Image (tube, rainbow, N blue to C red):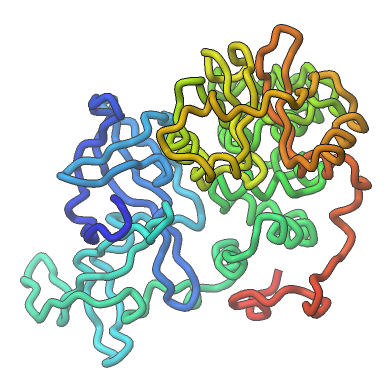
Length: 436
């Protein structure tokens, strides 16, 4: 649903079909998964519980939903068919929120939740439950029909859902630190006890935990991964940047590494094995296998559409790489790079093949870290292509990975403060009210 589209009441989503981009039905919606937040802020919708034709229920993240309209859900077609397991911080809308008794903040009246509406946030892929449809009066029973006025109110107009009403748990701690960047949340996790760290990690969703793991010291990464169920550990590794996941896998015992690789999607496992074949401090060991790759007949408009992907880091979005098919790494012949600034200067219909920077020499996969760092410094680059002897693009190295490998191993332990920012712990919503 595009930004600005009308809100959707969840009762209209129950049982509707879910289709892949080819129009094939993959299942039906059975519930919505949300995470509650502090101070009566609207819950974030994490995804849908979808029942497949086999009766297995799986989790479909909202990031893989491209449309909710006309009584159907359209997906990207990439589904993880592992059985859905609810996590500690998650709530099911149909199973736990509807028919719940809550209180109107303004009057103190008890009301029953009959329905709730979801809406996509402007210019983002996040979804929230923004309003609830409630009925005043006593709750219906088997012997008494419900009577009373019905009304739709903002989520913040009722109380009875908020995490503030529960005792301390991982979900309360997560809600407190919800606005932190992954690097800052990683710093919080690093200083928690091992027990508390495991509780919080178990409660994070896969994408959030993947982002945080990438920012943690190696020992913490191994500890956390080892306490996850193996299937979930494989899911989290798939959600990480391929180079970071490969680095983490390389530190595990051979038996554990092979077991996790066998649980991953074949394409993801193949990327991991390819990256682990390179020495850690080389361009091949530093690169990600998922840069933006376009064919020569792609246009500037096509390139900008790919660059807008919010899941891309700024460094990866800074340029696109033009190659002959196939356009997944390792690609066909690498033709050159088009920088983001150049894309902004040319009409949308211009072919990217006419804008190539083909003078800049690519990195060889066995280029050592000092050579890679010198390349970035010499040419003021934030990302650089890695090309093999056959001329195929293998991936791209980004400046953040170069810095990560050049800094001392304990650099994450070093405190730093922006100018004007006081030393000490950052202020966060609810900070100080919950211990660790």
